[in-house]
Image 1 (cartoon, rainbow, N blue to C red):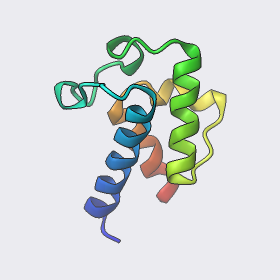
Image 2: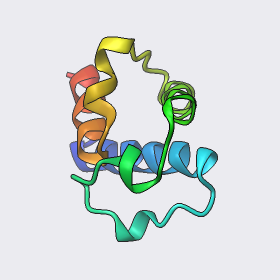
Image 3: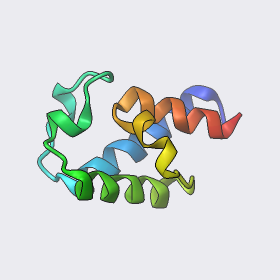
Length: 85
């Protein structure tokens, strides 16, 4: 799998995880650097549910220490890319 294919699959996993928590999330309107918790008004339980969805969709287990890195789409993609190297 090429990096662009992997990045596309990771982006799809992040989007799917977000939409599972906030079905009407305007993802197309968000930049990759937008703070997801603020933009989508995710409380701590919503954010935890997002992380669990991302775990399920990618097979990558994120620990609490990783949560700050998952606050943006770009951060999620970086974290997922690191697990593939």
